[in-house]
Image (cartoon, rainbow, N blue to C red; front, side, top):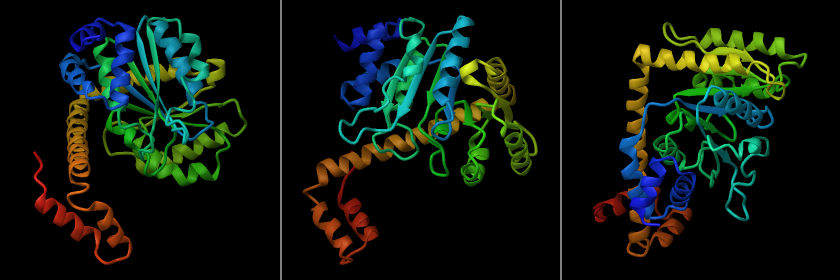
Length: 316
């Protein structure tokens, strides 16, 4: 299919065109650049919601229920499920989450699993581009579910408007270790599986933690209890997401967030292009394997090597 035809199909909401465009982006096909350039101006200010948290807390079940409620509201939904990469195939090992498969025949829902491919932060390098594709295809709500959360795994805030951190009772020391990082990125804190006995205790602990991280003015993260498998608390969660979106718009924070995210995106793209160019064109020219060995044996240091390479390499 010619690229202009694919772009036109994507913009008109054609699922096959969208799926093919995403594959081009994931595989770093050279055609992806042309597609992304064509669709970017067509993007709209739609809710982009990140869902993250430790393994086993029920993120997929929660996303499944969110899809269901948004569809009942008549909204179309795009979902990116970022999975750990299989060491054998390089593909996403969890596939398009089994729990979400009931939406597979719904033309108003598009679900795509993406592999992390080893990128720190639990976010695929292509995720932000796929968000653009879903946006341009006309999706009213975009959900991004990630593989985990921790001090170094907070990339999700660079690409979403609202960050939902999902926890569950009984995590114990794990929550204590992650608490600082969670408070920094969470707009909404979800205690899923809240029908468990420890739920009340966990709520008090999170409230206590929030008292230390509460900003002087602005948005204070909300704590919401849910039981995703029983569809309990989902309506409260959706209302809270809308409240946060309204806050971002009315306070001017959405504009600030967009500027910061755009800045980071440009920097990331520059780093990727420059590094790729140096590695591809300068691998033999600068004897990079030999220089790596020299660094390993301490005959030289990384800073000296980088300075020498940049001194002689012309970035076009």
